[in-house]
Length: 193
Image (tube, rainbow, N blue to C red; front, side, top):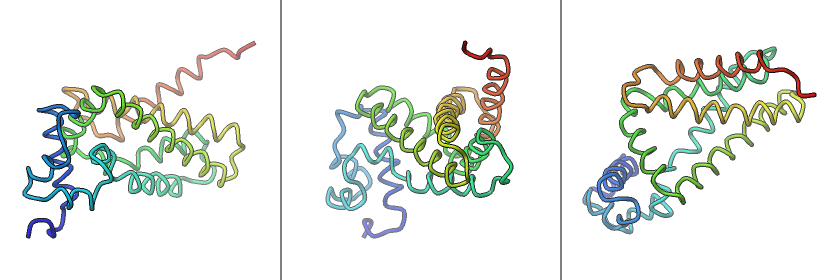
């Protein structure tokens, strides 16, 4: 039966994204998502707590990739460079094949305040993870917090640019550009008196 095939969660995600984009998030039910790929509502709820989580599935893998990116950074790298390298390590998650679905996902999230709130929570969790990881590397509390918060801003801006219509560069290249702009701005900034 279809419900036991590998890739069920991914099929549900793709169906949900298509339905959210065409019918609207609020007007789409979990049952409709499941039925659109020949599954039952019960199967849907085996994979996702609710329809909102379809859009946020994979957060654990994303977090692990960031940790791997930090671990792969030389010990003498600055906190900001460590965060930038960790973000570049996310490039496999944001492959060219996923750009179209990522654009659609962003449009669905941007169109719904509750989903925007969940997205902000995801970024806040990412900042906590980065800060904790930097502290474990011996970075001071303030520097770790600032680097992590700044890193999530870089991630958000880079992702937004990566999904823009006409953008063809890879995710890591966009992260590098945004990180470079941050460093340029910081270099031109005068200390607050």
